[in-house]
Amino acid sequence: MRLFFARPAMLLLLSLAGFGSHATENMIQISQENIDNLGVKLGKLEPVTQFPVLSAPAKVVVPPAQEYIVSATQAGFIEKLDAAIGDKVTKGQVLAQLNSPDLLTLQQAYLKAGNTLQLVSAIYQRDKKLLAEGVISDRRWQETSSQYHSAVSEADGQKQLLEISGMTAGELEQLGKKHRLTRQLNVRAPIAGVVIERLAVSGTHVDMMAPLYRIANLDELWLEIAIPQERIGSIKIGDRVAVENSEASAKITLLGQSVNPENQTILARAVVATKDTASLRAGQRLNTRIIQASDKATFKIPNTAIAQNEGKAFIFIRNQQGFSVTQISVAGKQDNESIISGELTGNEEIAVKGAVALKANWLGLGLGSDE
Image (cartoon, rainbow, N blue to C red):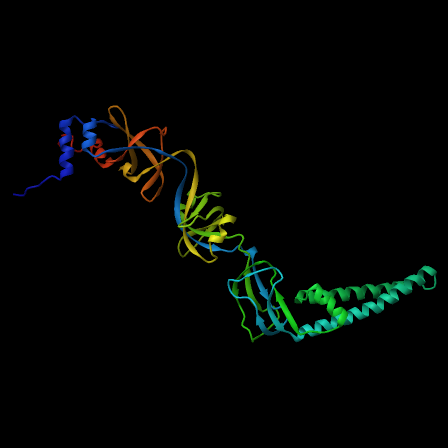
């Protein structure tokens, strides 16, 4: 013969039949004494205007338009690299110095074009005066004018090649005055930013357009968030993104149109608020929470206040007879709390502890039933 012993909690529920506890379909009639015996604690609904929808991993990236590759403008030998990874640089700052024989060729062509322009300019001014006096023909003037404009175009072209190579207006002016050639080519930062990567080594020869540095303007950063494809329907453009263990926040501006076949996620892009970019690092991986603004009455309650039955969620609202059983929708969860909505005014007093015991009474457990 086997003996079975009821658990203390079940004995308490069974004893409630003698205290007059009674449950209907959505009502529990119970005295204050029995409420105290069950250890039920009451609390208020806490209104919220926004709630977390989803937690997801993310990566901090630099917008493509804010990232630049600094390359050698002419072939040459790298004599010196002046910037290291992580350095902040200003626009026009010298990042590298190259010894470039090709720069000499460009300077020679520039000076030659300048000399030709001076000569042609003198002829142009002379013929212009002679034309006004009727001394030369129109055909002669057209030839002189054509030669002059061709010389101007050639001089401008050679000047632009030196500017593209990295020579400043001041350096060009000195070259024109002193005719002193130099093989030293200064490679300058095209923007103010931070050195993200160094792509060359001092003491090596590089070809024209060989990459030297990668620089980024970090005033704007993006979060690339991996959203499970089955949850993408709950995310909206404009949703706020909170970064775990950080005060940084962002706003979703794009939802991808393709699924990553490796992990079945969809890309969501969020732009980080300008004031928060300093607290993040490009390439950093972190966890995020996507938060939505509520378009209806929404409240925060402890998880212990929610009872589950047949796949639905319920809370117990205190009234004069005991408790009314009210179905709710759970919009999201965070740690030990849930965000709920339903036919609620916000003034209700609910059971925040002891919901399991109230659920047992509601379902007819321990009420003297033979079942």
